[in-house]
Image 1 (tube, one colour):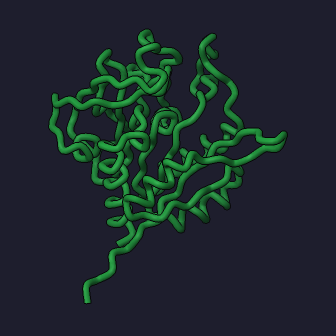
Image 2: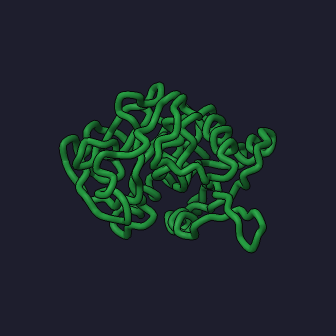
Length: 236
């Protein structure tokens, strides 16, 4: 009988919003669906800043997905808010605590959009609060991006340094290339030179992408498949 393939558990953070005058934890279903379609099991963590809860759930996980969402308060990385920066994110301190604790584990990690930015912030980096070409990055527009260094980003796509792909865009902020988090390197750039991907070098997958692969039928399976693959290796 063939050995049954293990379904790794991927821990996803959630957003907080108000619905019917009550505070709610929410998750756009595409994230969980992509994790499931990749052969993994999505497990959700509520935004409660209790380290013992976070530690307990991280101990059950084989990997982590950091989802997209609203802007992070720039005062978390030592800057005053720009006029274009939204300060409407609820319970941002949970994300900071969660992100820091995730980096302290050996778990494989994929950060998407604000999740990519979170990886940079919790590792000591900063963001560009409003891109000069912000109108070309918002509303789901598509644009080219290029692999700048080999790594998990290029591995997911099967592309080499200097090769390009088309990605979607739903953001007005990005990782500041002059203030990349400690240990991280830029592995992809957008058409205007803005950061499209960062990652830690080495055998552990800690990858942040600025675009939204969960919204792409062509690239989505590649990135979520790689996360599931690395999570399965971790479990073993």
